[in-house]
Length: 187
Length: 195
Picture 1 (cartoon, each protein chain N blue to C red):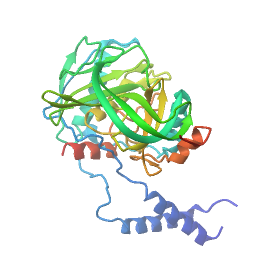
Picture 2: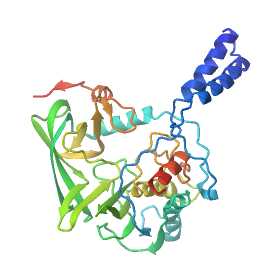
Picture 3: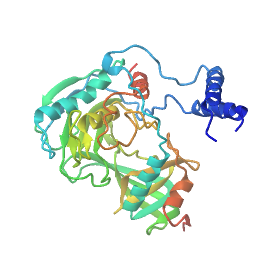
Picture 4: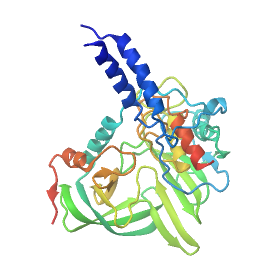
């Protein structure tokens, strides 16, 4: 027996009416106003769910990492420097109290370096934001995927509870499971 | 399946879809440009693209954002020969013939500096990937127009969107041409950041 789309269509219409009625005034819908032609929002392609992309990126980063840990940031020190190409950068050295070891070797407090951060200059603070990575703050808890003592791009996954911060749909359980070994107790 | 079940299925589908946020942008930084930034490009590249093509492709990035109905504007500064980036108040786009050391999958990276509470300098580095320009000819690579538009979004303080349809979604499919024009989510983001 094949589906009966006519009945489903009635349901869709009914659902639209119900969903519209349920919208609250603070629903963050984008403003629809006329704009210059180039700024007219393009038609969104069929919505794909990002979970698979996030998992694929996580797997890729885990594969590149020699160490993966979960822990709480205890201290951060930052300095202005030149990177291997001669670019101006700020490096932050992040000390993490280890809660869980997911991959590699680490114990006690782990230190890693990452691009970005804030330094104090004579005329005030100077900050660097790097597109793929967010420098944590002291007290933040996160999963940190490292290679050779440096955080990998996309390798800083800050946590609110067990949920990866921001709009991510990843949870800590996803990270521990994908690490292949499951969570292991820290020291 | 009975008609009532089809009816219920339709209702559930729509109600479920209505839970997907229509606007989900992330503002990653409160630091904004105090004056319109001047963008420059060193078009020397490793994909065999002409300087004219590269300049036009890169320039399309800030142009898109400046036409989104916000107060953001920019000035085009033309071509330069910079090969390194510096915190010097010059916003440059360069191409480098290596992969990003800590993220080999990165197509490009944006380095944005702030000082005294305002965005002060942004630079964009394209890493060694197969890049193309225009609307045809892409062979398992990426169009500069799409990558540049995404990276310029970062220089406005816009982070990665969870919506796969948005320019600010964090990953890009090979040869895609969707990110070069802004989705509703991106437009909402820049209007929120530069009202």
